Image (tube, rainbow, N blue to C red; front, side, top):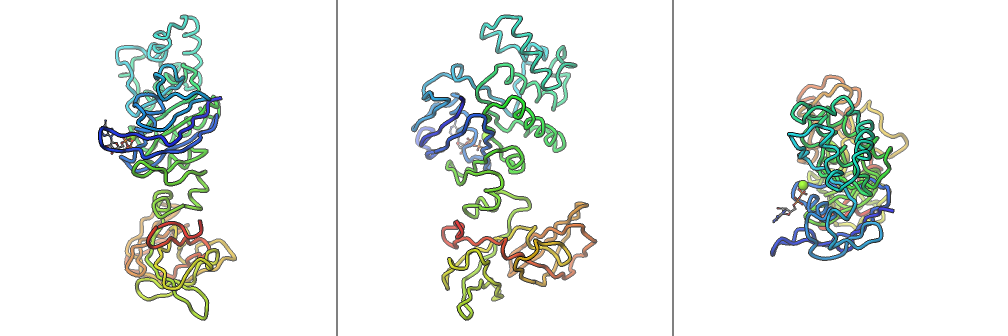
Length: 367
Ligand SMILES: Nc1ncnc2c1ncn2[C@@H]1O[C@H](COP(=O)(O)OP(=O)(O)O)[C@@H](O)[C@H]1O
Ligand SMILES: [Mg+2]
């Protein structure tokens, strides 16, 4: 069993608190991704799990052992870093087996484990090469191989794909997912890239400024963001947010936008809207789309005539940049046609898909 449990885990550097008390239970064989902007404390958290940083407060369990003061070597974890830190003068085979040699594992077993890892990662043709003779993707694979040969209980990854170009990153993402399906170990993975988080994770942990904002499956954090931070961090292009005020027409709550325009209140949260309350109306780009695009049928929609400032055509879809009540809005157009700057289009906003956040606390009113 290799669950990882964080109980009120804290970290300070001298007088600066950087991790403010994290509580999380990572299950055995779970793939958990920590995601958040640069500087929010992802690496610090991972390094505390690895034993590379001291823990300032709280408790950390790996398996059922309290490991706060256990040295890294005894934790049975393997860490893969962003810069692969391969030994340049050693062959791939030696790089893969080096930590086992240090640990005093017999030569025959080292060879077996290296061969197995090379097989899993498709590294057999490169075993005699040195890192300098490999592409970025191959080096990344060697770094993963070095983690695999140790048969750890828990894999820790710190932005392992950040140094690769976009295409390779997508390929390696699939390989990491396959690796997890094959070896089935617990993985704690850190990235600032929400697409990586969404595609890899069983559960996503969204961090900001040393705290956890939300934990959930990719679908949960996408569909039910706790607050505007999570709402705009997960999803691309990001969710649009509009300032609004709750009004009432014959007892029917409505949302008045900054330009005085009124829209119907999304049905699921009607009863939580007090007249006069300041809110933020959140709408994802795919849920405000030009007429002719298929929106989910049956739901209530709001029709809006909006000018398009710019269209970014990506082939199978286009991002339209428009404006509503003085706020820039992005909209996704599927099966796009050419849209000229300045053209006015009819948009449909899927009201049932809208989110409403408290204007002060920025918390989701549906939560
Ligand atoms: N050795 C250190 N001394 C002081 N502050 C540090 C040290 N390492 C990291 N920090 C600070 O801790 C915060 C979290 O850093 P880090 O965990 O590296 O963030 P992330 O990996 O999410 O980008 C940052 O504000 C960073 O400046
Ligand atoms: Mg980092």
